[in-house]
Every structure is written in structure tokens, then in C-alpha cells.
Length: 109
Image 1 (cartoon, rainbow, N blue to C red):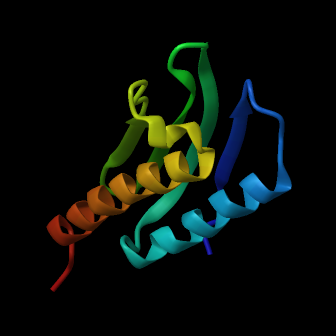
Image 2 (cartoon, rainbow, N blue to C red):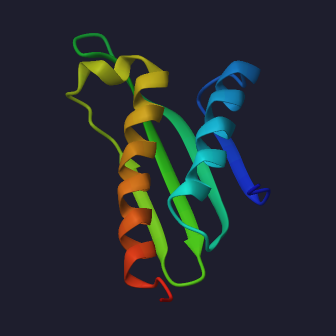
């Protein structure tokens, strides 16, 4: 299990349900890369626009033995990201694809 991950809430009230959802996705990352050392997830509500709605962003930094994977999901026009759980899902999907690529390049055969 990956234990050295920080989950930070920026302009969002801390929620155990959100932290649990993020932790489940962090634990799932081990399926995609065996060499994860640490990381950080930032949940942010940077824009509170009355016309576009409140769109959340999720940033993920993952430190592996070979490479640092960085995902920034700041899609201000994506109305699906008005739901923080969907923004989390989309960010971790991108991270999983990048980790799969890193793992394929550095797999020892």
C-alpha cells in the first residue's frame, strides 16, 4: 500500500468522504506502476464564476523511481467538473495512463 501521499484541500472544506474517495484511487495506482514512492493530490475550487458555475480542479504529483508524473485537471469549461468526484475520477484516469506508460518503459524483463 502506498502510504506517503498527501491529500490537500484548497478552498474546499475537508471531507472524510472525499479523502476516502481519493485514498481508494491512490491505492489503485499500484496496479499501474510498481515503483511509486510518494505523491500529492490537491483538490481545489479556484473559480467561483456565476456564469459558468463552480468548476473544481484536481492536481496530482506522483514520484516514481524513474520519473515524476504530474496531472493538472484545470478544465474551466468542463461542466462535468462541477462535481468534484468526477474531477477526481478524470484526473486519476490520466495519471493511470501515464503510470502505465512509465511502467512499460522501465519494465525489467
